[in-house]
Length: 343
Ligand code: GLA
Image (tube, rainbow, N blue to C red):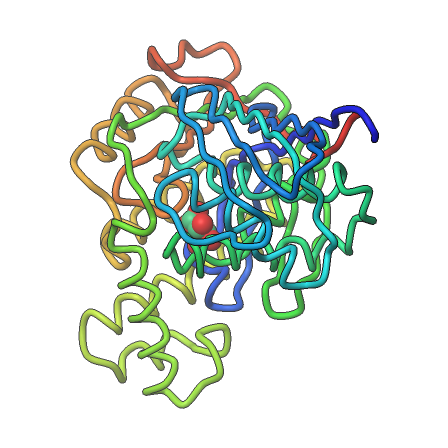
């Protein structure tokens, strides 16, 4: 029997393109250095014995009857259940899970956990790794069907496809992933936790997603990717506002890629501010704690700052001059390598 394997999956920062993934839109995330590690050691029996080291909790279940659970345990059971569902012959294993990406801080600890679990279970079973887009879809089913958050594919693709020095322009209509050089020159990107923890399953996230589906259906469109600003005006509030955000945010992703190509960091900052204003006023996912964190970044000299991820709390992303003193508690972020397995 082979010895242990360790899978690591990073969290992500989304430079711009928020709440666009489940609307078949555009986004520009990158994988970060922090993430989740899962060390898997094969067992003789068809059992999963999992330990979440950071919270000192355990779970154990038979591979013949995975069953449902809550919290972090739902991710482990979902990973085993979804892999079995696509015909992967799983092997019993003891799993030790630990992470460096804070939970509920908008840095995608959930996707990092899903991706690391799935890669560890595949590796310990000596099963070949499927295509990474397939894996992203499988991981998002764990979140949708086992955890109860109707999230899109942004976080999983960022975690699986991350590259050093590159952001990823993702087109969720065609599912194309295109690396974009992220050269910040004399500037830096920081994240500042608002201190307000959020969960996608428990926040207004699912409601926003349902509102977008409702707007697309009333406009008789396949998705809001085909919508225009004048379509937005044909709908009642708040649907009109949601559409306005999605349409303008997709445009901002294109403008951000162009600004990076010409190394126009002032413009990138302006786009981050515009994204934040839209997420606050049209998408209505900001909170007082988030506004406070944005204000602290701006007071420290940020060229632009915005709420990041699902919203209703979590972290703020800011573009700062390299020599500016960032707000206390903030962390600098850079694009890093995507998920990987070591033996
Ligand atoms: C969360 C979800 C993603 C995406 C973002 C908002 O991070 O997991 O799928 O919808 O929110 O852009």
